[in-house]
Length: 254
Image 1 (tube, helix red, strand yellow):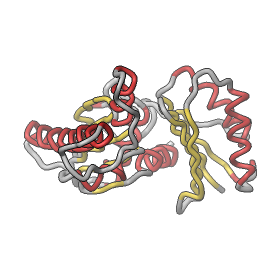
Image 2 (image 1 turned 180 degrees about the vertical axis):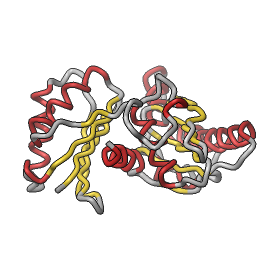
Image 3 (image 1 turned 60 degrees about the vertical axis):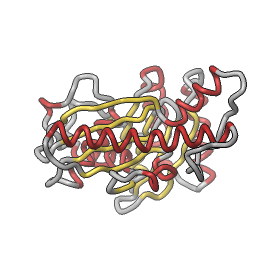
Image 4 (image 1 turned 45 degrees about the vertical axis):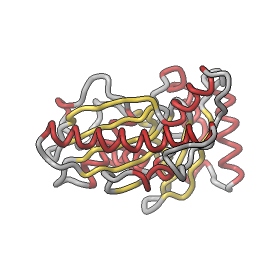
């Protein structure tokens, strides 16, 4: 039997299936708050059917959502798809973290990030750098205390803001630039965004380590983590499935 894991983000919704030992399949669809529950249901059902995944193969569902307008709709769809009542991730659940240290406004995706970071690296202070719509830096100490979070616009968000606010700058596919000195608009944006954000990540790690007076083990996750990873000198590990593993962990603890 499988567990369905749903991560509802501001840009994408990820549905992944885990069979107890590994991820069987994952789907990524664009987040659109104008879509109805029925429309999302049709998309999910079509994706599952296309890979021959039957309703009765899923015995548990875990949902994390940072889009309040879609939370209930996605939960209803999971109930209809799999005939199970999904577990909604919140700080009231058992996460393995020290509950009193969890900030009231901490997003459920960051909660999942921190829960799995602490579970997987219990003897370390860990920072999770999540490259999503926002670029987030979430830190937990070796005792399971949530130390805090820093948030900045994500890479694609930054590029889109340039494209939307300027008349001559194009939309750009993000990849590592060949030089810091761009000779055309696309290379100039790649240089500024990719090298600039790599420096931002390294500086945030350094600043946090100085503030807590201890070293950090740093995990990168999120959509563009694989693209920028070669530039990150302070990141120890890349795990694109880190957030989903956190949802799986929380599901197993509750």
